[in-house]
Image (cartoon, rainbow, N blue to C red):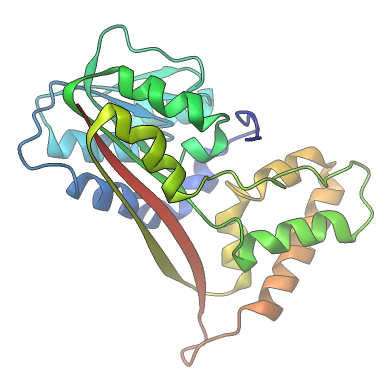
Length: 263
């Protein structure tokens, strides 16, 4: 069973510390859309501070773009940074397009949402014929960065039970996505890219993940314990990911990409 849509505290300032690296997959996803795709109306699900919505606007400058996110803080940041784009606070699970649209886009958001077997067909049904569903999801559940989170959650005594947090892989297998989408699509393109982000040290990895993968663990704990959790995490990551010749370390980060064209 997929985990429910996560509603924890998002910090736009923390999130945007690595905005260039977070935006790169959105650019690469957008580049794989068909050249002939005409977009008059697009929706960006889980738009965060608007970085991915801005990428869509650059590709389709005449389109009406709506960015939605469950975080009011993120939407406030997006509105300030990108006033030409419409943004709204909404849950991906509950959001419905008023009319079919040409593009539904999501960069690193759907892995926080439950029941993809229902969600993705619903999104496909919200597209016009020939429209595109384009999504990218971190697929790092079994990477050392995320196994270490669960290792610390269950290997130490905390005031809250953390054993169920992020215990289930949030992203399905590529074959499962293909099977659920192909009855609704004329074409389904699925691929995975494994990035190796160059980080100054283990502390930088902790800072990156404080605003994403680590957030559910940290938010579940009192401030003093959250600080201890982060300290232990950074210490373990420093043991597992060794410095390269220039003193920096590489953070492995696989991401799954899907482009489906509605039949």
